[in-house]
Image 1 (tube, rainbow, N blue to C red):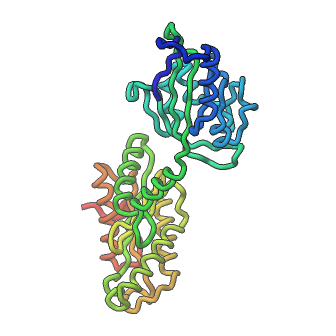
Image 2 (cartoon, one colour):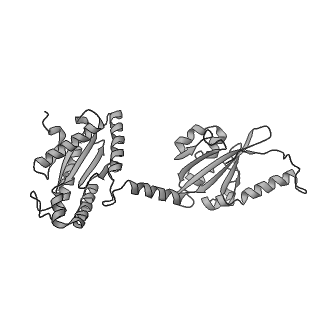
Image 3 (cartoon, rainbow, N blue to C red):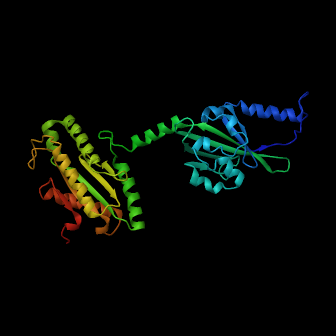
Length: 336
């Protein structure tokens, strides 16, 4: 939004239109803008709350004019809006209050931001884009601030859905390898920085090549979906992550989880997969589909993130070598 300056026009006023009438005309124009907008005076009071703003928020101008409670129309509580931050010289606070923002060092013509708003009067959340610009008098002092609001909810939801799709395995609908790698790096940094435990499960479907050869790939795909669902449902908390990291390979990241807790989750997963009773006539360890699980916990190892993932892989390999359909804990493995 461009900076606005309220000053005497250099050109002659249109015939029959006084300066006062010109100001009233400008206010009327703002009132009927198609874009939602409001104007605060230098004290932070609402002077204009246009009709588009009424439609967007569900709050009539009569409730807003002269008040400083404009943020309640968007958030249900009193908190600074972008126009308030500009008036109060608190631009540095924008990064803590808005999901996305750019200050005047990026946009010299004003201040822009985006945020989710609860829209209490309408009873629904909206993702809005905000732009603000100051109005100056002849002396260069800010006498008002204009803030416009644009509804980007549909665009934001589509963007989020695309991001979720990009991070999901298309067959099983759980996280894919890319998401797993990114998340493991994040959790590794957090755990090493704060000295908190981190556990990792590596899971492999036993004799899955033989399963595909015997039953065919379409049946194999259905079984992978069943396994993914069983893994996802076994006491995984909101902060945990289950992912498909290869053809028949899965992984589970368990932040802030000690070794005993990780072993408990691993056993729930192993049991749940076998109890799904997916017939596997080509398996030599069970009449049903089973999995082998390797467990590693950050408290047990040192080194870098690749070493940590390697420990879980080594434990998985040991579980397969020892007969499959079992769990091996890296910390219980003999050291060479």
